[in-house]
Length: 210
Image: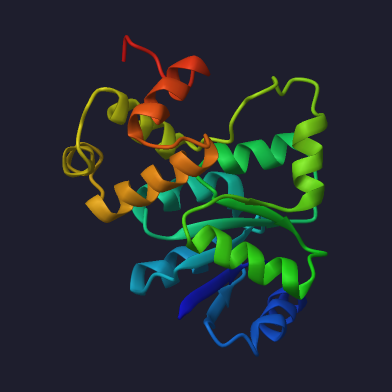
């Protein structure tokens, strides 16, 4: 059962998403928050599997909160939820550790697909968001959507560290490291760890001096 929590300051949005997920047999809606503070308070008590996170909140913003929560709760997959389909917002959420980005006009099928995708350790981008990124002038061809924590894991992989050693260095579990590793293999379309390292250097995702 995938436990889903939403942080959005619009009550109707939260209720609408709960309604869309109501009949999903493998998804459980565990609650909602309308502020940064109430979101933090909930996660301090229990952690969902997937957090749907809005960008604009009354007492802060989802972009900064995303980074903070990914550092504190690496096992929680964050899915950006917004009306903004702008390259800067999408990229900042991904860079800060979000596993995906969907728009508030998403259909039930898109929403459930997004939740299942990020829960499996992969990245999900709404079609409109993916189109925005692909058409952005400053997005070089071949650039990958690698989050900050994924980049740290990738850097250590290229240095030959095991999942256990990486977990110890970053203060996360070995299971979480393996989740990041699988995500990186998928994103770079790598066949194995050796291929992942080759592609990492080829695309300048890591450097030798770190």
